[in-house]
Amino acid sequence: MLSAPLVVEFPFTRSLGPVQSAFLTGLRERTVLGVMASDGRVLVPPTEYDPVTAEEIRDLVEVGSTGTVTTWSWNAAPRRGQPLRRPFAWVLVRLDGADTALLHALDAPEGPASVRTGMRVGIRWSEQRSGAITDIACFEPVGTSAPTHRAEPHTGAFADPVTGIVAEARLDYTYTPGRAQTRYLDALAGHRTLGERCPRCRKVYVPPRGACPTCGVPTGEQVEVGPRGTVTTFCVVNIKAKGLDIEVPYVYAHIALDGAGLALHGRIAGIPYDQVRMGLRVEPVWTEGGRHPDHYRPTGEPDADYETYKELL
Image (cartoon, rainbow, N blue to C red; front, side, top):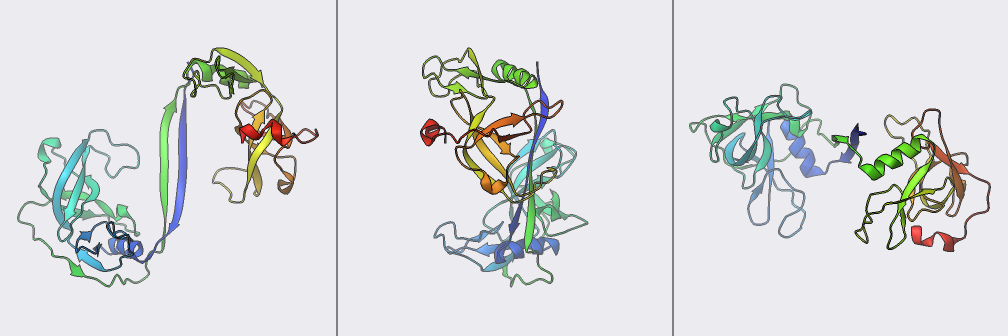
């Protein structure tokens, strides 16, 4: 049976407004800031808009670095990139002076029996801080004798404020295809594209799914499609992707292979990007040892009539 490790990764870059900038810069300076809502509640983490009125809010307040656990869940097997390498608890902590809770990790070396709702905890700051939520390394128990803190107004002014962040989003998983996708992948290894036809609606699915999502019946009939096809829609990519050795701009398109009932994705090459168009007839280009087409190039045929692919947009 086929299986393969796959990674879906997307580093998202965003600029920060005055509220989020002050919050993250404050963490760098070991200061936790919240924002005052229209009903007088202190929101931590702060939001840029009032959750009740949707109006912009900017009245910053400083809250304490200690607080109370409102709920928790034990994490017995930490994953890569999580705050702690040993088992820990995910906790919602209402910091002193705040009315909402902050999600983070609680270091509980004595195990889940030592964690409870209502326990008092405090922030353990990271030694190296850059203006990110990870500046809070984790929470740790502090006992009931720890002093509390009232919310106090804060200007939000810091030297060298953080104005932007990169949020790393990544998913690691092992993919195991079913019988239909295994046949499809095996066919691709032989430079063939295999779909499956629904016995009711007669649509040919590429890649095959083993069942028709519309009719809900198995799709047992195998159909070879392509190799040529038609560009239905496309976009011009102007931002170079990390780790992808393709010069920008380039075109990524939906391609309806001849005989297929829906379009699949593919890169268009062998033609200037500004000459790619809907209806362009293309064919796959395979690299040596490749298990799927590297890209599609024009065939030189006349463009397909719009009526032949309008249902595949």
